Length: 116
Image (cartoon, one colour):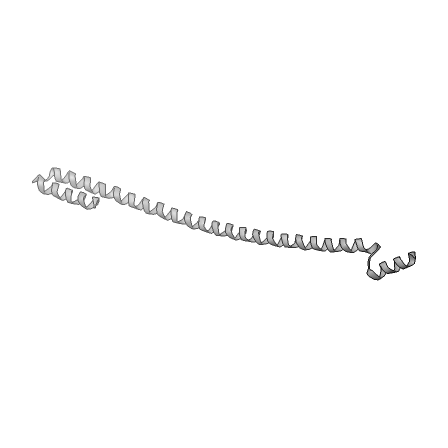
């Protein structure tokens, strides 16, 4: 009787090798799962690297823009200082000139031009 049971197990593929076969399938599934997780993590890392590069480029562009604006502000301040000096000179000349109303009107015209 016992021989019939063993031969039936061999025929069906069950018996000693069955547990090892299931373990190999489980390992293969785990390997595939790890591989997919690694691929997903790699894609996420690539996306983050691209985002970082984009942010760095945007930061560099903003720094250039800020530098340009500072230069513009510096030039505008220098122009404003020069025009103030011109107005002061015109007012001084107006105070010394006769008649006072014409010189004052010229200085006022310059001051009006600066304010507009």
